[in-house]
Length: 144
Image 1 (tube, rainbow, N blue to C red):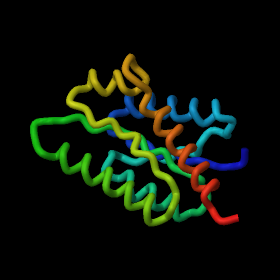
Image 2: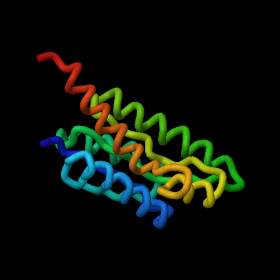
Image 3: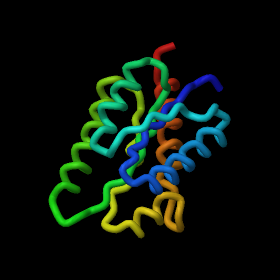
Image 4: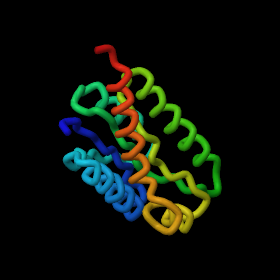
């Protein structure tokens, strides 16, 4: 398979970032692809701009965007989650390059750990799988 993929990972919660990244890379290599090229950003809010840069580069069939936002005592959580999701959707729709929302949006660190390859699910792996499926669908529906 010749498609190249990118992973953009928000490093605000380093342990979660590493777990999500490992899951995504496992999914890409398990599917027969080379490991994805990785780009780091400070936090989830920066994911859409980095995804836009990667999508516009023309180098990638899809982009798995990974990170975590954990609710605190202020409304900051709500704004970061909503704008990150909205931004990634805009990049996907504007460029046609699939960008997966692999961002954990949790109430507690325990919930996030359970969803970053813990006992609930592996959001990094799921994001990579979604990107690969959407890239394949793009190919299936492209004019011959």
